[in-house]
Image 1 (cartoon, each protein chain N blue to C red):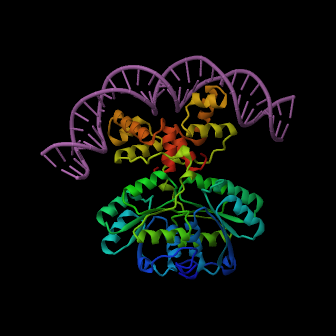
Image 2: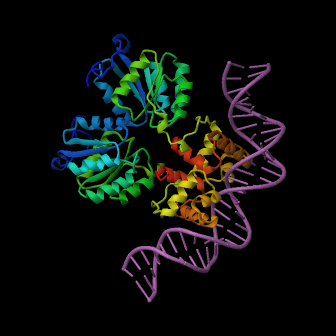
Image 3: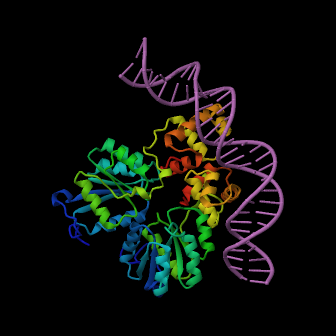
Length: 222
Length: 222
DNA sequence: CGAAAAATCATGCTTTTATAGGATTGATCT
DNA sequence: AGATCAATCCTATAAAAGCATGATTTTTCG
């Protein structure tokens, strides 16, 4: 297990996977350590840096050359999804690979939409991770999610774009406020709140608050 | 960083931490690998086994001697909290150490209640982990949680203990089913579903579905 | 076995949501 | 200048959820 090429059926052009410089962004030291440890004995791959939040990650990218950035979906400051977009905007040459606990279609489409080259669930084994690196470095895509495991009711096809007001309402709904309470809070009419609420349901393609909140929570929106 | 005693201010009786046999139970290979890697260069500690679910864990304990079991809170089959109870019931000599992503007072009290000797958040560093092992092996307790970091809005005062049925209903609510639909699914009356639902609200100390789902999602229950 | 906990069901009432179908005012962009 | 979109507001109805109160039957466990 010490050579990236010594595994079953997996073999790639050495030039492409040679000295792949990797940045890992995750707020869990165990995951950082796990990944570093997994990659430590792979000569062709080099973990050049780690970050525990988005700000650190951006700062690191400004001062260092990185081939692939592993981005955790759930970060303390901003979501990995937003970070992915920032990274692709500011450092287009850096390839990004999403790292998530969850196996959600919603995450995947959103990350890919934001320019990610791959999506890896944290329950992936070493082989998956190495293959992901190789694939992505070669300019390809990688994802090891099995969508049929996803509860269909809770995965929107596309991640909804929410307006400012919709986001506000969503947060207040999640906090347990009712329409009248939200109306009072935002100094608008109950019917307006209800409109925003209905728009949220439509955009998330759900039919009630429970699904809405579950999805939004899964996406780190609340 | 290769000697457990070579770090700042931390020094313990060698007899107590010698050859501590450890079982790690976690469904994320990355965490398993991370812990193993962290502990690999510590001579006094030996990872004698790993398991990715509760059944494997129990089976391993039946056939092997273990000093400390690291238990992930979120396991595929049963919760780490329940597993902790089972372990303490069936193998009282095994010390348990809870491992969680979250920094939730609720989890801690529940685990301790179920006989855990410690509680470690996954964002812990190597030093914390080694100290935890030493403390626990010495018969003490360890926990490195900082409660004030918890978002008040999403942290219940006490972790609700949910019955089997309540969990089922909770999951179905989160999937967007209405009471009539849940009733149909579980072959019970709508009023019964409603009872469970009300009990969920009471146990989570919330007043509507939105808050309920947000909390449950935050706790990884759905 | 006996107590406690869980699961089951019910009635009645109030509040909140969901759904449908508009309409008006600004701001923004082409 | 016209089109588009966000935000605002409205009426009205049906469905669902929330709240109180209480009761019966299983299960579970000491």
